[in-house]
Image 1 (cartoon, rainbow, N blue to C red):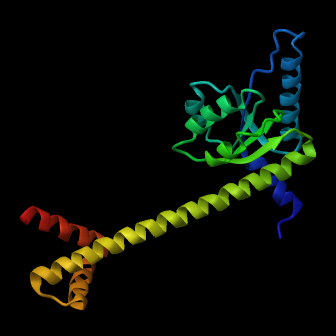
Image 2: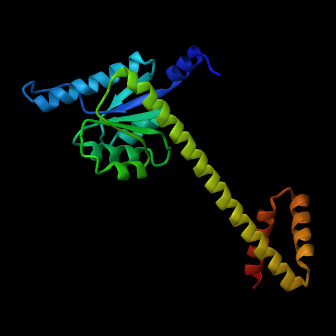
Image 3: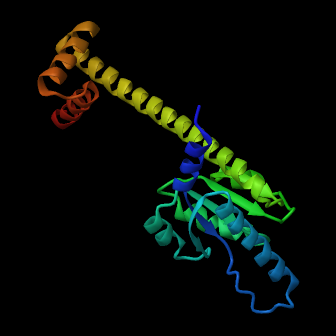
Length: 217
């Protein structure tokens, strides 16, 4: 079991980028802008008070992808209200090649986009409530969920790849059985021997066998 100091060290190493509007409110009479800036500021203070490593706050613009690639954060927080959907689109585009856990904090009670947000990779969709005591468990759960989903994704990819390899080997065996009159066992043994002699995977030898057959046909 990890000690409290070990857990805190883990959080300090976690690099976080917040995607949020500018805190500089031009019109102090704009209650909506003032409220949003106050809420956003509270989130950032809460992150720092909870021991997280807030490395940057970025606007949701066309340069976001390049900035995220340069900073290489471990987790991205989208702090948005009515423009949450637009901000998410920028973040999803920015992380399409390098997946990262995404947490959305919003005061917008319209949750009709929750399902879509989760579908595009949001690990946690949090409506209202930004007390510092809630931030740590929320991010812990978001990280755990992201890691779990990534493991499932890897397992699915591995299973799909293994199935593809078995299919190629089966096709190569069938080809040898047809053209060289070998039994299934002998065809398999021949492919395996070639793979061992050349230091290749059986699937690679099988694919080369199929490719050669196509060239000679």
